[in-house]
Amino acid sequence: MFKLGDLFEISTPKKRFDANKVNILKSGVYPYIVRTGSCNGQKGFINESEDYLNEGNTISFGQDTATMFYQEKPYFTGDKIKILTAKFDGFNKYNAWFFMSSMKKGFYSFSWGTSSFSVDIIKEQKLNLPVINDGLIDFGFINYFVAELGAERIAELEVYLAVAGLKDYNLTQNEQQALDIYNDLIFDEFKIVDVFDIKNTANILSSDVKENSGNTPYLCASSENNGVKTYISYDKKYLEKGNCIFIGGKTFVVSYQENDFYSNDSHNLILYLRNKSARNKFVQFFLSSCINKSLGGKYSWGIVSVIKKYRMIDFYYPPGVIIRTFLTCLI
Image (cartoon, rainbow, N blue to C red; front, side, top):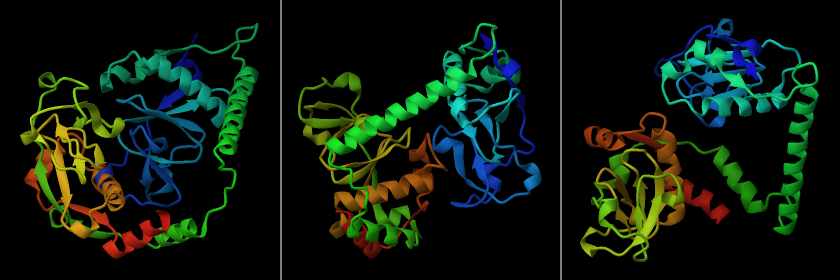
């Protein structure tokens, strides 16, 4: 067993950049790392003084979420991020995966919260690592093990692609055209209430339904299975019309619902596209992504109260004609 503090120097970033006070770009030179659990912790790029860059070949650690990612290149950070710098030679992105896997297992038993991941606790966290006879870390095995895993996954992917008939990696003319169109898309700003009619769903408690009692989807705010918890038979007066965008009111999970459904919570929202001629699943798949991208970083829990209070909330998407042209190339 090894203490994390014996293997890594745990430091505070040179400067913390508040997400609400910086201009976050979609592309740039230096990434902006926050506590999110996706995209390698990267929220985007920012242009700030290089004096405040953190070194690459380090691990970014979300102090109140225990999210951790290997950062190969120099980067800026948001609030409550710690920098883990290896005290030993030979640290790289490959063995970093092994170390982080062991770290995640160690932190799994902790509850969520800043106090759980104070610097002192981080330092004392113990890791299970392979060793050689003299008790030193067996880096040879770690590097070999990670390389073997990578080769195994590539081999499995090659077999799957061959069986599925997907060995041809060349884009079709339509696919290439769709990419060309997307690269040139200009996203305009729209008021969400100008594009959608918005309403709250009915409220049907899970204790009042019998699971698998029918064929109608019963939706919750989960991100799994397109929000469908089960299928039920229930009073038709609570039935919601499908062909709409559904937002989990307390989780901001955005999904397209093709069929009529029941909902578990009146905090959930239904968005009906006002332009009925464009109300098909492909356009609404696209708009769901636009809503999630535009609002997901600003609002999470409690999105319903936000939309109720600020009916003029904005989101971004390309003009309708361009959407149809883009989707036509993919369908």
